[in-house]
Image (cartoon, rainbow, N blue to C red; front, side):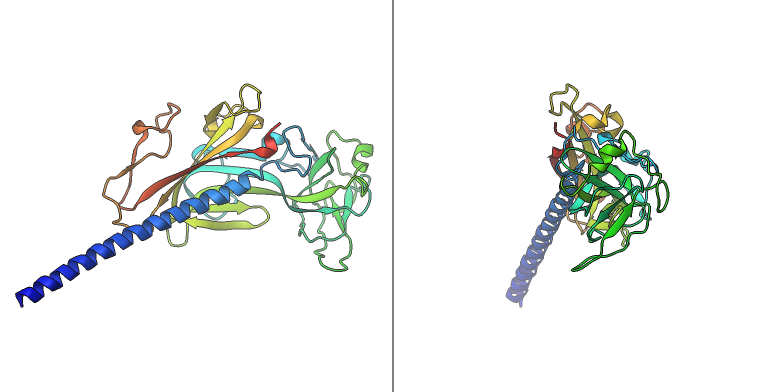
Length: 332
């Protein structure tokens, strides 16, 4: 009986140890997957920033149809950040609970060619179909490699797509259908230069925002809001988001210093972005109580070091994932 108890005890001890190690390893894998997925999603959209077809680049600044008024005005408006969410107006029903907020804009999807010369008098252009799904109040980008215009769809376009689809008119008038579209800085002759011969393409303009909110289970997650796709929960267990902006202060086309959003002097000079996400394990009791991690520059000295150590609020495993993304559509 004694020998049997010893054997059973040894087996129980081995089982518990193996089970504990498996649990820790599984949580480590889940944390790594979440960290990679979060950075991959943000990187893809950051590379969209300022995309304007073949006119992309900091010098390829589109003019703006100012009526109806757009919040988009120049290359500086293709990206904006909010340090700790300060000043951000939340367009979703999800409450932001932590971290920074970043918003980017750019043309998305495949461009659709126009079917004839743009009509400045009636403030409209015509597409062969509406497979991009343009809707009223959507932003559009129309341009060739020489010029470009950004505006807002003011009519209700027909949702036509597929073989034999009829042409779709897109209006950018002051309101609704009709004329009186006003294009800031563009003469009618220049705007009418958009034609089939210049290989003009039309894209949807999207506005994408990343932030940290609570999901339906009460866990922190990385959320993405898109003007074209709505609100999406991307990755669960992302506890915090830190964004630093690489600003070119010397004009040589290279980021010289990385700032928080509230310290950026000129958004047009931001050429790269450094993203950090803090990811927690799904399970508690995985890490020692009171473990520390380095995530953001807390004391404001410009570096993240031991002086910026933060203490984990629970016994979950916390890991920091960081990447730096060059904004290729803003490079001169």
